[in-house]
Length: 395
Ligand code: FEO
Image: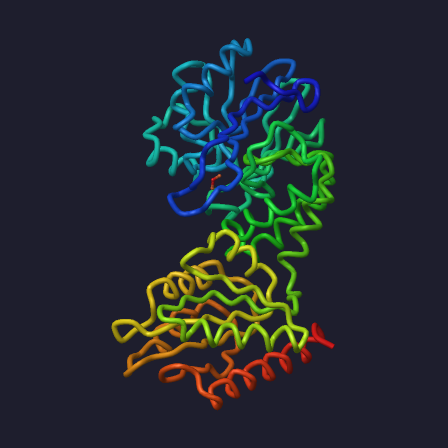
């Protein structure tokens, strides 16, 4: 793949991974991804910003060589995770004069993860700069987007922010730039939900800092490059805000149709009350879709049968995921059933300790729902409606 110019002297030199369908053996990638690497050529020195996943190392190095890149003075490592750092050893082999420029925390991680020797590093701290001659790189520490060592690199003269994982998307695209904003928005929201949402408080601070830079271009390390930074910054400001939507996310699993009967009744009543609902059958759902729904829903209700005296493992997975992703959800509840007993409810609610939610009275029934059970579900819907009205998200 050829280099693709962003500005004179600044080019994309990454790899598009069209076929990848799973990241971290966890996150579905319905549209593949890219490992964006950028070459910045100054009048005196040349810097490479981030590299590529080791699975694409051969292709990446061939691309660099075929593109006529004869010398690299600095490899800037914004983040130690291997999808960006994994090809650094290969770059150092192909370009032995290059030094790795990063912050001390990232250096230590690269030494551990990739066994890069100490003498190959130049360390920099927050707000330090590196001159390439007529171009200046400024380093901005940005903990927790995505790991504690993460930093951004800002190219002052061209006003380009290289934001690594932050503001990116898992999107393999033949276009370099975010021209189809509705498409990129959806992909970026999924990415935010799966990767960034647990760090909402940190992100708020980083957004303020980035806002003050007034960058013309934001170039993340996955997905398309934003020539209209306002588009992605406004989307993030919305996602990290405390505002929630009049919506119930309903991950559920049903073994013999009992929990499904409850879910169907509950869903119909929510809709009658004017509350949006997103049911996710956990035996079929793409967890990225579930994560995305959690970004701004006011309420989560988990639908779960009892198996082996506890919750169904699929519901355990959903509860664990919701707890780990720490969405800004305000209310939670559980609906479900048992045949003879068990501790399903206690186990599920005990798994939601990270969520700052008010637990609404669950509806747990014995056997198939009877009239009084449907009435209990109606009362749960009424309570959710009242809570949403208190937030002024339901009229
Ligand atoms: Fe794309 Fe945290 O690595």
